[in-house]
Amino acid sequence: MSKVLVISGHPNLEASYTNKVILEQAEKNVHNVEVRRLDTLYPDYRINIEAEQQALLNADVIVLQFPFYWYSVPALLKKWIDDVFSYNFAYGSKGDKLKGKDFLLSFTIGGPSESYEPLGYNHFSIEQLMMPLQQTAYLAGMNFQKPLYTHGMVFIPGVYNTQEDVETKAMEHANTLVSRIDALVDSTENRVRKLVKEWFAKLDVLPENGDYFLENLSANIAWFAPEGEFNGHAGFNDWYQTVRSMFKPDCQHIVEDVKVFENGSDIKAELRIRLIAETFDGESINLLVNETWNLAVQDSKLVITRYLVEPLQG
Image (cartoon, rainbow, N blue to C red; front, side):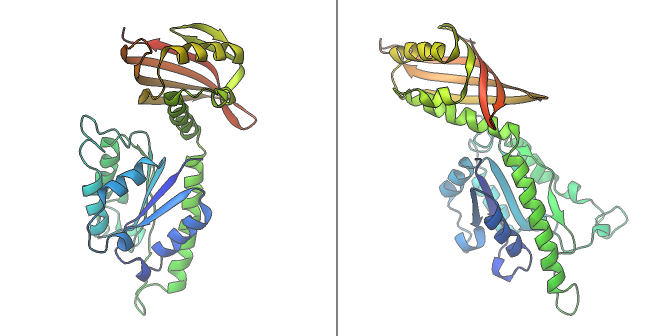
C-alpha cells in the first residue's frame, strides 16, 4: 500500500475550526498515512531538513493541508518549502528525489467563491493564484493533482459564519480529501511504481531464495534479457541463478525513469534503469538499460507477464 504524507501548514492548528477537523479525519480514515504538524514540530521555524526530506522520500502521495493566507500559503509552510525543496533534492542536476510522486494541495479559503472572479474583489481565480505551487511540482517532477479547496471556511463570532457551519464544511472537505487520496493510492500508476521500487530493492540484494520475484510473475512469464530468452517460472529461475553466479550481492539498480500506460486491461511500464555492480571476476559494471514490463491484474494483484531488457551501453 502506498504511503501518504500530509503536511499541515497551519501556524496554530489548535485554534482552527476547519484544518484541525480535516486532519483528524485524514488520520482516522486514510490507511498508511503520516501527518506532520509543522506548528507543533517547529514553533521556532527551525526546520529539520533531513527529517522532512526523509518523510517525503518515504511517501508516494504528498498532501499540503493549509489555510489560504494572503493568496498563498502560511509563512511556516512557505519556509518548509524553501528549506526542504533544496537543490539536488527537489531540483537541480541530481534533484530527482520527488519525481513521480503525487502532489495534492488541500486548503481552506475564508472568502466566498464569487470574490475570486475578474469582477470580484480578489480579481484572480484560485487556480491562477496557485500557479507558483503548480510550477514547484512541475520543477520537482511530481504529478500535480487538481487542488481541493473549500470557500467560506472562516468563523468570526457574531460577524461571519457559525462554528457549526464551518465544521460541517470541514467534514465535507475531509470526506472528499479521503476519497481523492484513496483514488490516488489505488491508481494503476502508483501500484506499478510501488512494484518497481520493491522489485529493484530486492534485486539489489540478490537473495538466495527468489520466491519474492516468482510471486510477482505470471506462471507463463516471457523473459527477454542479454543472458537469453526464458519462459515460465522455471525459466526465470534459470536466469536468476545465472545472474547470481555473475554479480556480487548488494549491487545498485537506480530507477531513472518510469512511465506507465494503460489500454483497457493492458498495462505497460517503460523503465530506464542504471545498474552499478561488481562481478565475481572483479569487473565493475555501470550499465544503462531500458526495460519494458507488460503487466496484468490476477486475483487483484499486479503481475508481470512479459519482461524485456535492452542495454543502451556496452
